[in-house]
Image (cartoon, rainbow, N blue to C red):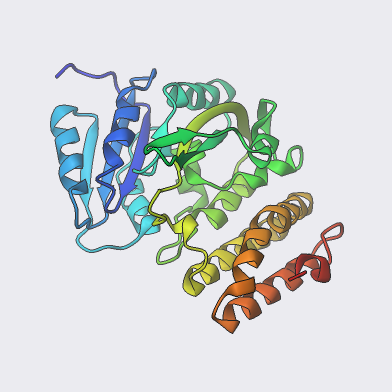
Length: 314
């Protein structure tokens, strides 16, 4: 093994039962044009070969370190376990079923190092399954572009409220000091754990940067097992709605009302319609009742949002 350069960024890679995809995530790290990284591979008590794949990566490349969770604790807890071990100036995240673009770390790390901002965020695309097998990367979606294009250096939510639409942990590289200074941790025992965390980052950062480059390819699994593909389950819906509302609460509490209004408009236009489609034929009345209550509350919160009747046109 060759001696790698001293790392400037630690990438936390949590995974549970992702033996099919983990090698691609690991290879995408090895392919980075910036070699000065370290990765903490957190095996969340997998029942398949994920842990072995992680261990083999660490045996071949000293930049990888493996953490084994004794029992499955969820994505938030796995990320927090990695955060506890970070000793580099910068930190990023990559889920073990996704993959980095080759220049992701070079662009994100380089931007933050030049600007002095607390974090940088980039664009992302979805990896979709195709009938013939395998996955194909899509295009940058409008709401992603609204948050990241054009490039902005040293901006804030007051100057760029639409950045609040980029709520995923793995599109960002941030200063480790921000996490410690602001006391940031991922919620544990909840799905969609990065929604509230992202808004805390925006509101507690002194400044952040946005770049239009695609930094991550985010996988939509062919078997439908990703948490984002299980919104027809009532417990998942509850976590989802709680996270959406919690993120808006963070923005409003920080006085970022324009960003909160931007987030409401995006949720009502993008997140709610697919849920309404599910609700129309869902066997549980509680699903329709809880979704309807959420939409009515959301529609009444900010001027310019659709009315509840418009949003709930079953």
